[in-house]
Length: 137
Image (cartoon, rainbow, N blue to C red):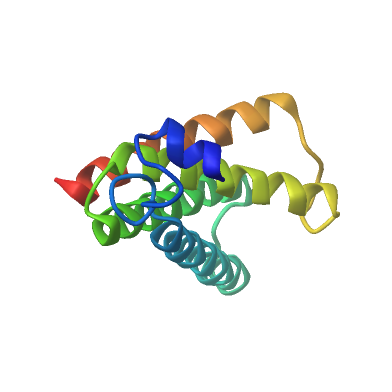
């Protein structure tokens, strides 16, 4: 972590000053994970109790991931008050890593495809970057 703070413009000693705020990044990640859980449960309930077509499940789950990344990055950057793009991109990378870990642990349906990983990665980085930028604007 010391290297990340140094690369991002701060030192490990003044990580709360000008570098990446690990506390705010953790709060944003927690918020994102909670949003993914709540919105996924709501989406599952909607599929159970309505006549939504099963083909839209993938698109709606991507929307859930995008919203969660945006809101988490926005909250992390707003809390830190600086370096919004870096907060958003790091949050997106952490979310993508958590998705890969959960998939490797067998917690997700299906497996990991290269195309799915690219699509989710692109979506997470775009939503996280935009949320981070708007969080400090």
